[in-house]
Image (cartoon, rainbow, N blue to C red):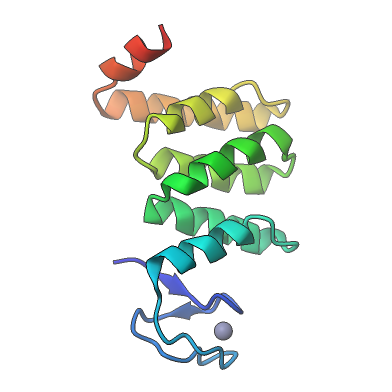
Length: 138
Ligand SMILES: [Zn+2]
């Protein structure tokens, strides 16, 4: 089951909620594409905790579009906690691109980020078939 959040105030909601009990936002339906759009936009939210939350949800949704944003974030961002959420979310999204993103993060200026990226890559490659990836990178 996916967890849904009010797109306005980020209160956790039941999937079939029509109106946010916290802020009154009309949440008639969670149409998946617009929900993803809102989450992608929230990656640029001024409040760090909302950026982090958006990254986490996108990871849980397996958002392919998020990977492109994550790549940009890793190249530009310095906030460790946001980067941590982005890396963990990237690792959850099933796509060869996630390896590219984690590889990129192994060259990040922050040692914390580099260490986490290496750890996530190890988890991914030890847990499953990765022949294709090896061949791909040469
Ligand atoms: Zn709300």
